Image (cartoon, rainbow, N blue to C red):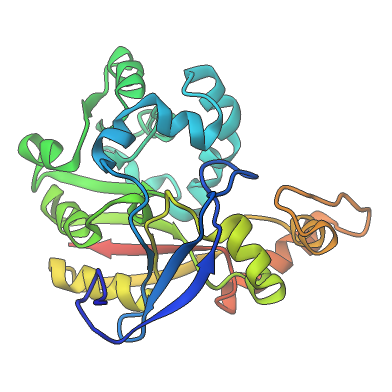
Length: 295
């Protein structure tokens, strides 16, 4: 067995059991092996989807992940987290710029960005969602390579959240981001981490019920993300951890051993919750890692 990312033979099985298959509460029938490369630190699993491209283009993918491929349902589910993405980016980086969002769903994030950007580019494999964005007048493409043909070396900002862990070839993905960007352009790439405090406290329960998923082909760390970025040509690279879920979510997990159990308690004030999230981020124990790149 060789590492699917760096080719090293220094590989171990880090988990062997049922994992999440689609939305919360859905699991594989059979056990799935999760591998860790001891050199580049990436975690990945055996192939469980035959034709990945066709799967992401289909309604089945969004249906299994979110329970619906309907535009209105997408906004209901993602409006709050769409606004939360601005904590990773701010708004000034988009002003008067050509901005591309890769894996953008219905384009909810771009709906806000277009108010300050010069123009927006949407990259999304789902045909149903591309239809929605075409209706909005976005420059829309199913895949990164197709966007590069029209916007290569002239896109000033690229964002991509919760996408790189889904792609078959993450090295090609990061290289594509580099080719899409103009000189001096910036990219912001976010992905779940393997180091959240909940994994440390709950171990296999958290791994099986949330962290490991058939649709997340990879789990990355700073080490392997930086390696891919440097290989693509980036020299200016930095990372920041963010805790997306609050203290009540952690307590719910500890109480019920299930996701989406959120305890509401008078002692969990907004100040306390913000302080706890900040500490998770500062200590590298948060559930989300953002890579900032400049070409």
